[in-house]
Image 1 (tube, rainbow, N blue to C red):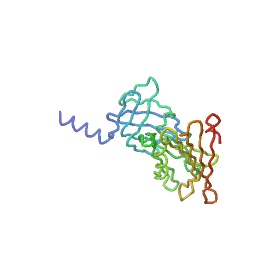
Image 2: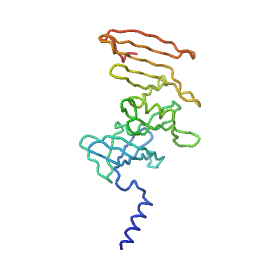
Image 3: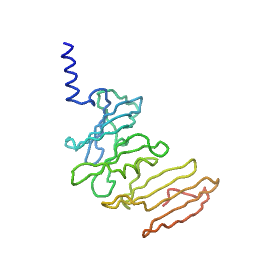
Image 4: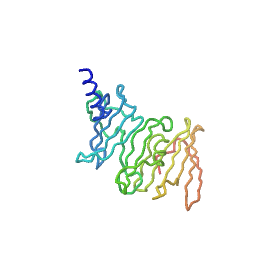
Length: 233
């Protein structure tokens, strides 16, 4: 009988895979206009989950599209939710374990999967996959993954200007903004930088560098702190 039990457990493991055992599962409906997602993650403590995990992407007809793997799939549950192993828990897309958008402005949706806190000041980091029309699947982009893993969080997307915007900081008083354009079949090209230096009390020193006709133009201006609006374009 013991031999039969061992055989059954081994068979179940091989057939169903390790994700069915000791995993926490989350269901993200309408993570984008085209997809739903099911997340499997290794560990959950209180409202924070992390460790090895996978994201299964489904279309809205419930057909599996692709599976992604993360070494540290960090996510946070909703207030009052208690993750239970083996139970499928609903999760809002605002939790940002999975982000789907058109990152390279080619008209198709791409996928970013949370992978730890390797960003600036332990900010969220992401593995980024772009849709490859030839392979009809998502392929990891090293450039976008690096950009999505080095800032304070994943980059912002300015769809109107077709730019990716990354933020960082140094110490208490320096904030950095970098903007990139995506050149088809070549990659990212940095076209704008801004440093906001607030180290001198009562003032903000703003230095901008803009790439125009392949030449960098630098400008510096100092503002009184009480008159400076960093959100103003």
